[in-house]
Image (cartoon, rainbow, N blue to C red):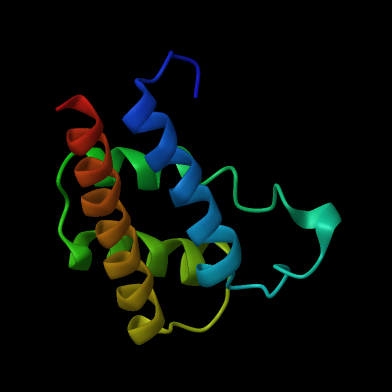
Length: 103
């Protein structure tokens, strides 16, 4: 990413990467070890959206745009929204974990 992240941000960044690769995976490469970096190019923008408190719908819209415009694949709005909700759930989970550790 270029800048040093706080531990909670680092954890969320890592989880975001995992969700994009293993859950979103629009081209179906999650089972291919050599393709582990396939979605790295989208990771910073998705992470910025999460940090900016974007809604699930806003995150899903970005994922849909990447899928349809960037990759030329058919839209799958339900999947994009599911992934966005998983990402926001991870945000809450990481925040709770680090809040607990700060006490």
